[in-house]
Image 1 (spheres, helix red, strand yellow):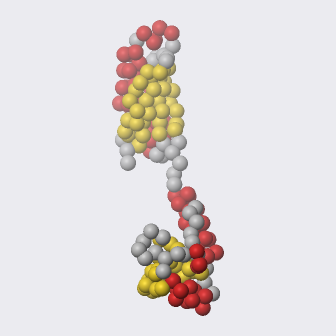
Image 2: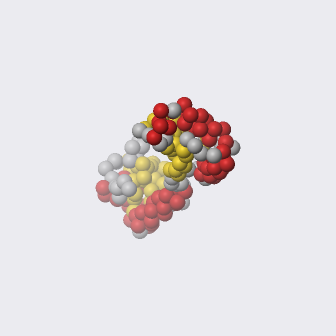
Length: 168
């Protein structure tokens, strides 16, 4: 959280003053604004230091910090954490099992999660990568929800791996 300057820490000679309801009071000399804050028992809190002249708010500094904390908590609550869900396939997977895994991937994508699809090749299956790629294509064809390819299928050792993401 950024540190705001308050009261005598503000260095600009002229400021744009806003009250605690957000109504603009106009341009004031810093000394006048400090006097006004002192009369009301409030603080001058610099909201926008880069503006010309800087914008200051006439509010209790503790109340301002509390409002910022509440706003930050609300933003954290709204942010959805994206999880990466794993689906593991094999070259010899039966079509019913493939469809079951595709339905599960549909659920994950609908929930907004990334889906990492790994197809493991054992022994001599590694010599027939084209068969494994066909299984991945069959898996993609079995998906019913819209998705986008986050990463194309690529070979990593004895596995073909790709990542799917929900469309925005």
